[in-house]
Image (cartoon, rainbow over all chains, first blue to last red; front, top):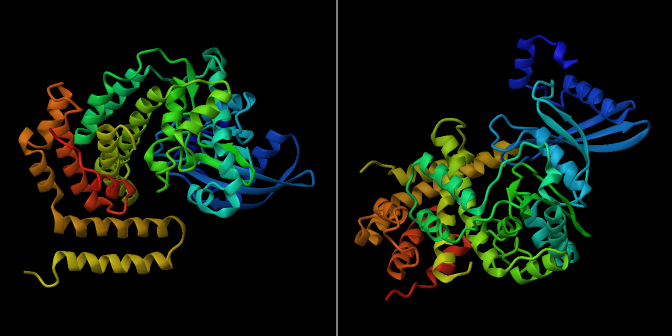
Length: 347
Length: 116
């Protein structure tokens, strides 16, 4: 249907998609869901949820053949840095078939759909705000088993051979190549951060040269989990999966930025590195502490580079935003973390 | 000197942003909080001058940009204790302005690098 619309209208939809909570947006959503589910759907309520830095999220309450159903609609922001939504959804579907807990994908729309480029998934109950599930007593049991749940999810994702992802235009590289990509971005932005150069120089001889062996989630961290009272309910935000080695995902989970102040538990603020490596090994994977350490240094540098890139969105005028300007000063946090981890061998 | 001074003007903006945050919701309330935080950073920066502190700490190597160049060209060892001790001073000076409540600030402050 969309393909019969004139180009001008399609371009308008691309730059100015319908508000899913408005009457036209809801009607469009009803058609989309009816087609995906093969039954009549009535949308009862659409509620905007707070989104991440690069997405817009709504909860959709609907009725399909008399039964109440709940969905999540996520649209890509126009200034997003991640993969196209449709590609993310396909990675999620395939990860789900490996036994990684992910929300079920219901429908995917292309950028010229009236609702814009979006993904509809089934609603999964759980707490998305890490500071809550990290601190509130009712999540104590979930926290206790979370390291095992995370290790299982990662081991399942990493058990798939590269051919499993055939046909998907995903990129990646060896550790050394990933480091060089970060360095190119750093020089393109053109600022001088001595602690970043320290980390680049320290990592250069240490990053693995082996070619990528698996698909990594790429953003596997506390802020991207849905946690129920029973543990890890779903892994969200498949925005930057890429080909690498398993230790990259584990190192990323150890970066300081998502410990939310619980720095004595370096794995996302909820576990020790030893517990993570042991659980990962019990789940069939194997990584040694030295390899994890190198990827942890890389993870902190990569997070610092994200701060620099987001700040540059503001400084360059691409995305003028107080939030992106402010994140630039988080570079100082990462600089301190990098000096600590390189000077003392731990963080 | 102007009356009010630049820091006094910024403190007034910070107070206004706190008030605005309470009256706003969602994304705008969040941005008001971020903006108040930005104002607090500028107030601290006017009082502390972290650029000068970094230049001072890294002066034996010719300053921050020169340290970056030397590390890029492999002329400086990233595990040199003298360099790490100086970088520790420099990053602490910046973090004291940008986020003195960050956990690593106290940790790093309490742990000197033992230079040769």
